[in-house]
Image (cartoon, rainbow, N blue to C red):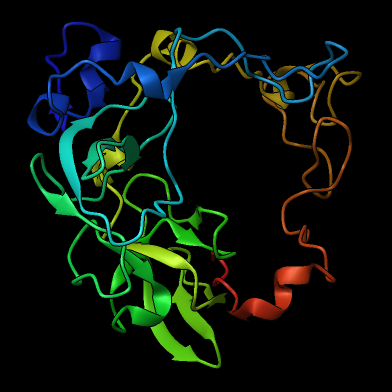
Length: 277
């Protein structure tokens, strides 16, 4: 983690990841890059559906292979690279057949390392195999919920899930939130923790950097007028004035259950995540 001299109020608390220590200084793979259209939170009618989005620095999307379904073909890590569209780093891999792809880089994977997707692959960081072949207690990431669809669980920086048990064609996984959930044992998972675990320690430091990330300003409801927000109005700093916390549209929030009671995946949750006291 890199800090700065307090030359300005914004630089005093600003921190960021020191990329020079972990990333290779190479040009990105042009064949695996494409331009994504930005919508600034608007739908096809131009109406804002998600507030506080827009602007930001220009960036190109890296096509990441979340399936990694080249079975029994060794891959050679050419470089660890930065990805502007995600918090984790990505690894450029060239396979024995000459194919080049980007994958999520696990923590500890380095240039010139060898990885492989196989049922009999060794339990080493970066190797990918079915959950049923992974030893209990192992940390994995990029886990498939449905075999063949590609990894969906544990893909952000520093995340991982723990393999707890195998039974009746399912594997019990402990999520980062401490929730325990069943997943089909035939789904693939990659050994190790996702790279860049210090990402949650980054301090943006100034408003301009937030705008560069594509985040527009947020106005507090308490400083609005009563017509604009349930918290608005009053002289000076007034309390909320409502019995329960609400959104700007008057919908009750805070403590209200949002998960549908008949959601299809509820039967796969063995233990719900603990409540935050």
